[in-house]
Image (cartoon, rainbow, N blue to C red; front, side, top):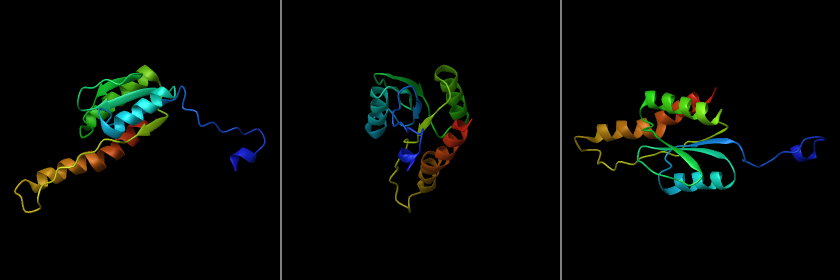
Length: 127
């Protein structure tokens, strides 16, 4: 619809946009970070493991740490500018049987990364 509006020319280009990708050390996160970098975006790639992606700036970030989220987002904004795109990709799976003594330790860890961190990342990137 926007294509048909006079004077409106939507662009799908991400060139120059600031993109923050969590869980970027491997797998889909690394592929997403590489693709955005290849398309000309300024990529802030984060993970709790050390890594390097051509064309991206990397930060160590454990998304289950609320203070670390705030600190890294502030650093990214200070270095690259306001965040235009957030890719909340970080996630963990800890296959622990429900009857195991440490089931709730695994449950809490998974919820901290797979749910709570997503909301914290969005809130930190809003400004």
